[in-house]
Amino acid sequence: MKYKSVFDIIGPVMVGPSSSHTAGAVRIGLVARKLFGRKPAWARISFYGSFAETYRGHGTDVAIVAGLLGFDTFDERLPNALEIVRAEGVDVLFSAEEAIPHHPNTARLHIGDEKGELELVGISIGGGKIEIVELNGFALKLSGHHPALLIMHNDRYGTIGAVASVLAKHKINIGHMEVSRKEKGKEALMAIEVDQPLTDDLIQELEQLPNIIQVAKLID
Amino acid sequence: MFRNVAELVALAEKDNVKIAEVMIRQEVEVSGRSREEVIAQMDHHLAVMERAVEKGLQGVASRSGLTGGDAVRMQRYIENGRFLSGETILDAVSKAMATNEVNAAMGVICATPTAGAAGVVPGTLFAVKEKLRPTRMEMIEFLFTAGAFGCVVANNASISGAAGGCQAEVGSAAGMAAAALVELAGGTPSQAAEAMAIALKNMLGLVCDPVAGLVEVPCVKRNAMGAANAMIAADMALAGIKSRIPCDEVIEAMYRIGAAMPVAFKETAQGGLAATPTGRAIAARIFGASAASK
Image (cartoon, rainbow over all chains, first blue to last red):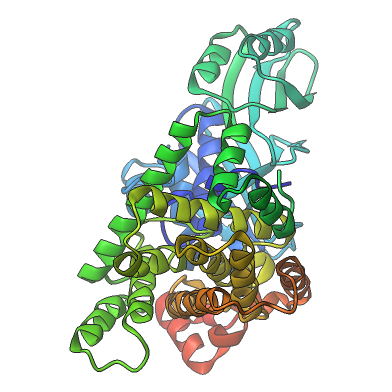
């Protein structure tokens, strides 16, 4: 079942006007920001489907940028995100794409600076919930129905084991896990779905492990 | 975990508890958090709803200027005393609009089940507050009851306008509110399910056709009518009237209608009111001619 928590229905607390097109979009931007680990120097944001048709009306553009700035869905600064991001010198470009996506509310974010780049595809499935279906060219098959973690890491022995050990110590059971890499020894990605809620303490502990680049919670 | 309304009602009847209690117990189990934490979070969401209504009743305006001020207009009309329907129902209408006007003005709201439909549940709750005099805990329970029915709709149909049209948003919200109203008024779990069925039946087929893609026209007034619908459906169920089609089958019908609905009527701003001459003219004024020609 997709919806298990009452707060998926009575919630989120958010800045309007649309849970799927505003709050969901903030969360897609926030995941990108957390995985990138810093404010990007530039962002190319492409909208598909309903997002492409109505992004200006629902403030989807404002919302994704708010997420990139690290604002949460209930942040009162959210309506001014476009002005804030421009004042901070981030080069942001939006485009509405004609291609028909699998889900009507799809956004592709390509962000970067002189040190690196990140590209992800997120979908907003309703009520503020999101799924990340692609990250840096890695296709993800997370169900979106369980708490999930995305971990960018260096492809070194023991890294996956260390992450699993920390989860075990916190009595968190892994329900589904995907590991992928571009090239042997280079950047790799762990996508992990678990059965128990993920706390900030746990995220901090994972970030301290050797060879971990970034950790992002997809769903609490 | 309950998969449908029949199971939800059966769980409440088996333990002789409210639907709200079934939802609270499940939330504690699923989240791994304590009962106190779960109730405290809902109390916070209730406080957000109260602030949104207060703000809307002071008068707000959206950036486009399309919405704002109607909640205040309705309150003045009620004070005037010469209304045709009833004071409680008009108060629900006013408070539902207040919430959605705040939402359209990019204010802080609590999605129930979505932002576009956020007015219905709090609008009805705060309207019956005068009459039923609920405790704070009973108001919190109202939201758990509404959430329980919303979970069933979300899992078996949809709560997204882009996937199921407005019936999935304001329709779901009206059903949730109707069920919660019945429980707050002392009705049984099965009467709550009847109220949900009656409310949702009368929202079937409703398209999502926002003018210029904005969550304003007709969303604010659809929330007003969703609240009115919920109040009447609750009164019908409390009067002992039953839906000939069981609640779960109404939800299933809503899902099938949503799946068969053309994309033009699912939050794309291409059909319905968005495609009327006035709708297109508004889009052109706000976004320029290219947006309106789509």
